[in-house]
Image 1: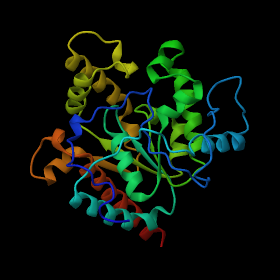
Image 2: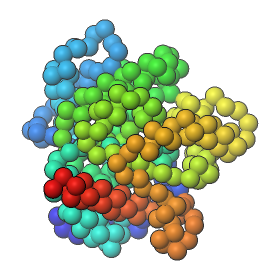
Image 3: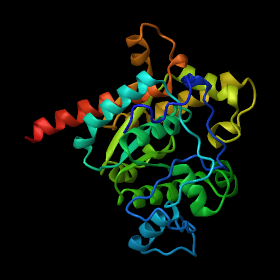
Length: 295
């Protein structure tokens, strides 16, 4: 891979990256053991009486539905220096990964999709957003619509089935939903690969979510009043429920730690590529230590 791959503009700060609207596909989808010219099919997953319950058939349909590259895929921009570091660290990590999937976990708005696209590009993996696969499985445009018309439990059931089917595949980077960690069964699926927690200060998350709105975030949207105060209060409550689950991840990427290494304490000016580099460093540390213990 040439050093110039993916270099298109100067990096944008993490805080300025809005999460794409859920009705549009933003995943960089490449085929996994499938012909590039294969045509996409409807994804038949989820709690639906019309679905095929055979896990082998369901997994095959999942692969087929993601075999064609999505039109309008958003490219991730980073500098030449960052590109070189990313490629070097990716080459260091790949032998230890050995084709296993990478699952990004963390609170809503933590940058899992953006960072996941960068990691997928430099690792030569395919990228999936589990929320978007759930939306496609149940035939709805957004997670918010699923919550409204059905329930959070209905969404979580479908989310678990999507993660189960993805766990049978290889060479994927998966951006999971913020609440995917709360069900132990999901960890059973994700632990077949490598899990990385993107740990972002709640204050930074609340400011970003307040700035872009909560319409696509059903666990926050019902709150009224000052956007920042309400977002911060709800995020704090959610984090207290989930922090022990997030800590189950194999590697933790702390944005505060990255900022300190750069000589400041403002996580909002960190670029997604800087976060991806730190993720690769943490992955390498975990995997090499595990290899040493095994040997």
